[in-house]
Image 1 (cartoon, rainbow, N blue to C red):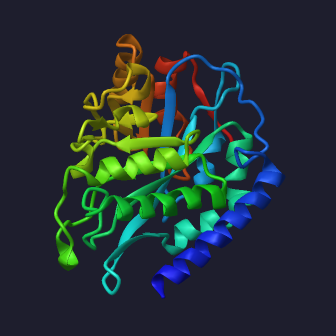
Image 2: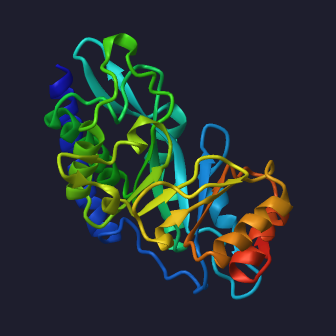
Image 3: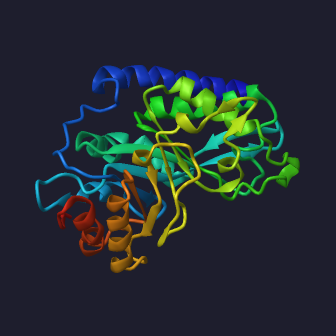
Length: 302
């Protein structure tokens, strides 16, 4: 029954994606080119349980009018576990589902502004995680659920965050060396032109190679998960795809945000990660790092 329901959902997803492709083009939106800016790619994780993903589009550079943020991350979908079928499955809570169901008003406006929208997937205390699939077939099935979601809702990619899995719970397996390699390999095959990013934490992040296959190059980005700090992700990617800097907007001090941005530019890294952009006017916090990254203050437009 579970497999039948999942297959029906997948068929519906693919049918809808075909309609969306006709309406919006291959990227899921009739995106207008963003105003050009020079500097690192800036990323904003949004806790959609409490904040609007549209907040990301409210910040532009005073000089030139470019977007302050280049990638918006919907935080977060979950990897859940069905104890009856012993199967991991992709789960959306009501707040994530609301964003996805209202893609025309929640996602498409950002994409039309030139901002990529990525879905983060996170553990959910049920024992299922990216690092404990026990077969290549199981990993590939979950990869297909993720890529189907990207197609169905016209998203720009998937972000992996291997936290809160609680490996071993509900009789699930402990992490193994092959699981994440099989998962990312299958997802990249399904989504050759979409973003795959890694929040560099958890057992999956330390298991990037297996049986002669290294998946590092299959990621578009990897970033430091510890806010207010500088830590180069241990992923074999060019500096242009790494964010050693990570800040929590409203909690990391503006001086620290500026220092981390300055170091990002000075050391030639190409990504700057932020978390928890809320609905308040955070232009002062954002300006603290955009001045260093792009040579401009940021303007907030409610």
